[in-house]
Image 1 (cartoon, rainbow, N blue to C red):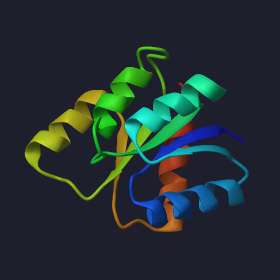
Image 2 (image 1 turned 30 degrees about the vertical axis):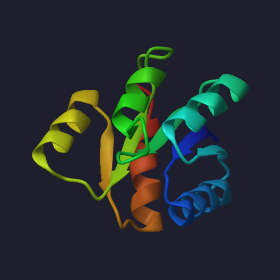
Image 3 (image 1 turned 180 degrees about the vertical axis):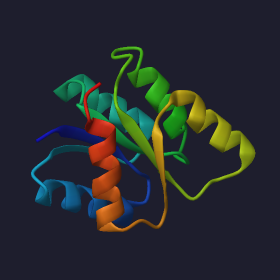
Image 4 (image 1 turned 90 degrees about the horizontal axis):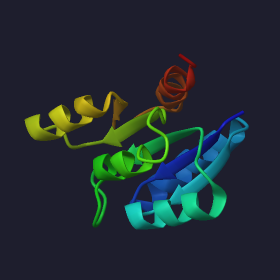
Length: 120
């Protein structure tokens, strides 16, 4: 399975995603902010993919993905968010990452992650 970076500042959402991914056999690096995520990556290496909340304290998820892609330009990623104004949608689309609306189901999360991790 894959090593996935999960970043969400809502602790209950973060724990839920981590639990579901681990149940599917993934290794998970979890963080509640962009800075904490960068620390995790510095400590454990780049993940195979990332699941990021858009609205994070300090550095938002989109800027975090751009920072991560400085190290690996093709890093697969998806966003989870409740924010859907035009500017956010445009920024997410510019990254080429998949996005999934909150709230989500276990199956929609699993399906989206499978799409993100497909090579090529």
